[in-house]
Image (tube, rainbow, N blue to C red):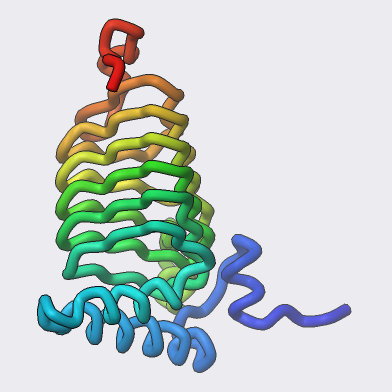
Length: 193
């Protein structure tokens, strides 16, 4: 029986030690690229953005405003026309998958990582991570927080300041702490462009 590495454990949703040397090196690389991106002058923004996009699994036609932070980058999968406004944080110990045409407002926090409820495991430094999936044409409002294991359906709107700890159905607006569905998005909410 083959023993899994801490990185393999992390990616498979098992308890893992983030203090592992390989994972520390992966995070250090991502932090260095994020720092370079965040400190780049406006005149060098496009080249700094290309370097940042090099961390991600895919990022066609994406645009990210500084400041931006992530843990690893290689677990972030972006669809077409992804946009992240200022001060977005994505803690990607597990895959974070965005559909096409997703927009993140300033201050959005997306976290796949969690710590054990059991104090002994938590005090040893263990954590787990569960994937987050965000559908097509989703808008996530300012300061919203998306927690581990959540799936957000197509065309959903997450209100500013919401704490999303459960799946969000397609074509709904959610708000609150914790977030709950406050309404359906109806045909009269759409216009021809």
